[in-house]
Length: 509
Ligand code: FRU
Image (tube, rainbow, N blue to C red; front, side, top):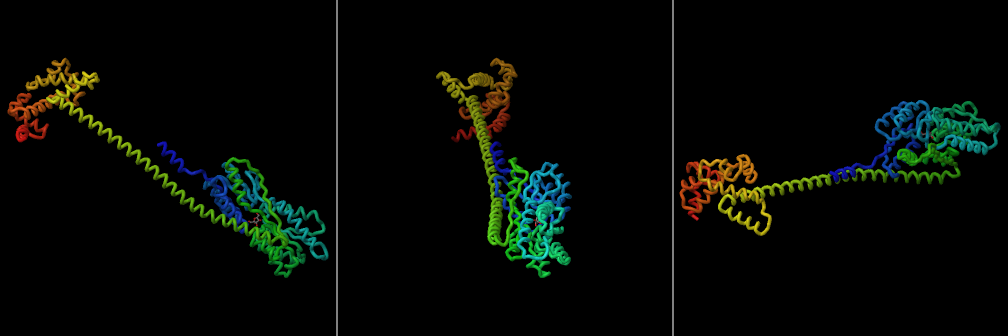
């Protein structure tokens, strides 16, 4: 059993930490971070399972998804809230259940969270503000102050609020510029519409800062339509290869900011929290601005990094397949081992039972043989042998019993021919009460005194039939049977043949 429990312990694998990720939306930037988190599942010292839900910019849906992630038994929630305020209640519920919550990229309007990881969006806004100033300063001389336009993401989200804080602070320090800010909703369509509107006012923006590269494409579209793509300088945030980086390479944008993803750092932080390791509550990820000057090298690096990440995911998928296979094989192995052990135990037990039974049968046989020998003529030899051993100072086995048997044997043989012989008479002869005699005979021979008497009569008859010429009738009376017919019947029961047949067989030999 101990071995089995060890095997079962070996079977139950190490704990897997379940991390639930609630993404506010989709898009390339989120897909990149999702891939990085998935790739990090097998990166660290503990088993991690990352489950990602996407709310497609719908706060209600995100709240429902958080509930189902919790119901599915997650150990920790990573959340990028679609909107900062309406999600507070859902997050508080998670916290009340004792589940740690990591804000990632976006924050909710509550301080009740375990840790935050992401860029400092105020800083990002400030850096882009400085860059906008620099771009405006480099513009060819024109009449009046250059116009800088900011197009924000939805202001119900924390990055939009913070980016705007940083950017507007940078703008406020410079009165050589005009600055307008419009709120959009992170989409290219909305940014396009707003730019068109602005151009229609006659106040064409010289520099447009969008809170993401997606919106920057909308601005570019409007600029192209107004044939002003060379005049309007556009900048965005996210800096993904194939997106912002490419727009800079094409010259559609003057710059972008690589908004850091680092899914692997999110998983690391989650694991530190879950395993009780020390961790920082605020974890700021560093990004960087990319302009026409360095875009090609950044593009190369980013593509290489993304390729490596994809390779990692491929390796991981294969690893997972192998792990599933290994797990199945492991379970089969453990089950087989357990079966083999149980079989061996069963065989040993059956073998022991068999050996014991055989021993008991042999003992019984020996006892019967001894009795038979003892109660027939041959028994004298046996007794003689035993007493001979006693002479040699060997402890006579069961000497008490032998003595008793000898006395009983003598008594029975003496009175055997009396058909009315009672056991009471025998008891008297050897100085024992009826009950005592019954018990002793039963203990030594396994038979009742009546059975023993009958058996000895028949054994004596057997001996007389084979060693004398006395008739069957004479022998029957001599051993104490009332009638030869009853004697023959009993004899056949005992030896399987009639006394007459035995006599004839004996003569034949
Ligand atoms: C993607 C996105 C990015 C932006 C970030 C802010 O969902 O809109 O474009 O930088 O979210 O949270």
